[in-house]
Image (cartoon, rainbow, N blue to C red; front, side, top):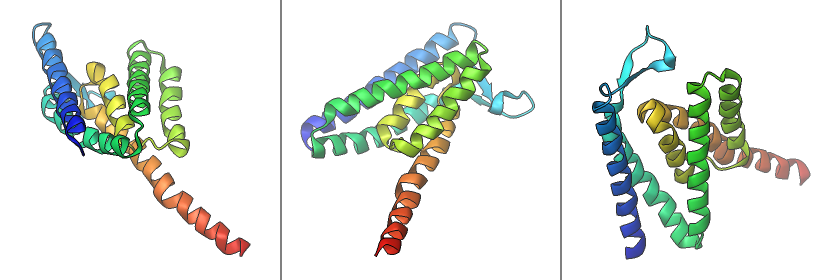
Length: 175
């Protein structure tokens, strides 16, 4: 990876770290840092938003390195930025639907994320990072990361295991 993309990786990580520190500072001065219960059930453990200050920089560093390296090799930096922005918007839409009590919309958006993983390679870093960032203000960083990992696993399995196996089987049947 050349120096330009190395600086971009540091810049993305620094920007996300500053964003998360500002988010936590805002929460601290507006009633305290929030906690979120797993599956939104009070009988399950709560996870503090403060974990985001550890998790988001790690995610930003690891995932931006992967997508910047791929973008540098293929010359598609614009599409990576577009995908990142679209993924942020999906995360924001899912968060807004949940917070406003639109259970059907929340379900449809989440199902859409899973189904899009069969068509699009949503296992790539720009999809995962954008989705997590879009949901962080509402849910902290840990729960969106867990949701993204679920969708990631489905998409990765489809694209790297199921589709190649089907293609192999189809070539064996044809010839």
